[in-house]
Amino acid sequence: MSDDERSVVVDPDAAADRIRRRAESVRRAELDDALGKLETTDGLTPGQRRAVRRMSERITETLIASPMSSLRTADDAETVAVAVELFGGDDGRADQS
Image 1: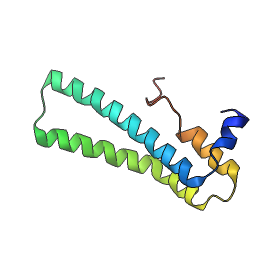
Image 2: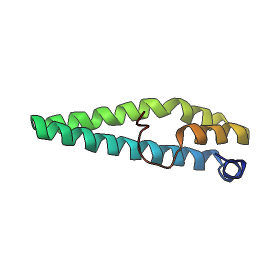
Image 3: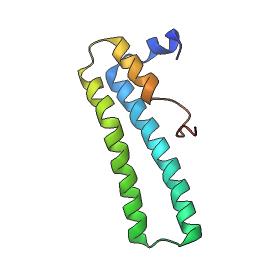
């Protein structure tokens, strides 16, 4: 992230929204991929689909809990910018490395 991009997102609430949107985008993409693979192999019952979806939601909530907590107490623009840089990417997919 460039210095110009860092200066754009300094509001903790806006940063939190951006991180939540990114996390939800990644969660949905990965969930769709996993469900697609599971459906082609064994198929899933509606209850199993709900369980997998809920598991993905809980994992996502757990992963972003710490950065969200830091944003709530952030008192400087650098902390907010770093959180956005680390957790608020725009590509919508998990790192494939």
